[in-house]
Image (cartoon, rainbow, N blue to C red; front, top):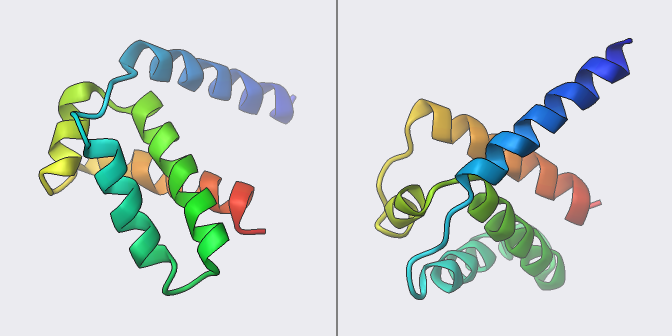
Length: 99
């Protein structure tokens, strides 16, 4: 029963993400990935940093609107809701790429 609820919640979240999917502004995705890799490579091997940051980039594009992604590239402080999503993305990508 508990697994069913988790899968249902994930399915609803996936639908919400699909409805919001945005696009990075020109050069924004590349800028994010480069800055992410520079930061992450201080803590993990370069290849794992690249994989983690590519994962994060893709998930952010799925989770945020184009306007929100512009805010990321401009260095705008995320809202509490955006921060929650960013934390979830970070954890998910870390599980996928840093193990």
